[in-house]
Image 1 (cartoon, rainbow, N blue to C red):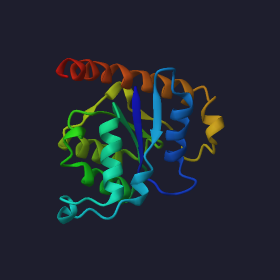
Image 2: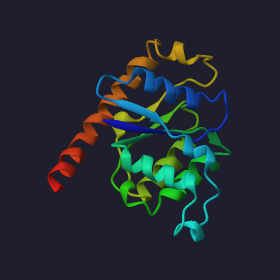
Image 3: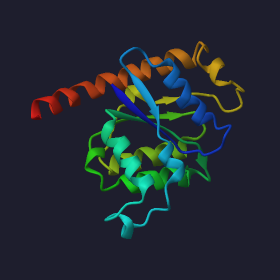
Length: 182
């Protein structure tokens, strides 16, 4: 199973990015979590460019089409989602490969509930399949955990592993359905 990780923060020391990289480190056999670098290179969304998308948009589209599921982590700014993740999602609105795609939302700060709610609303509007058992809200903000510490933390590590397995289970019926269509 292939999971594409999308981060709503471009900060080098982003706790959300660290959480996604930790998920990739902890992925059980049969699950591959791949970072979507195209998110940082996307131009601001412009519908006029959809007929001839820029290279970064094409890479984002290809990554989403390739993936069996998406893993999204984004901080909250001013009670909303970041412009980074909103811009990425705007470029995916008309992408057929996104429809009914299993998605898990990771929240590194439970008090960031406004952004979490807004992100989920956007994803539902876009017809994503939000896999609730794979969604996490972890109290990492201010915990000062590096990735290697997250990977062994008694709360974080098992929760990420369970979330990835739940996402895998949600994607399996979709994969079987796709095989029967071919």
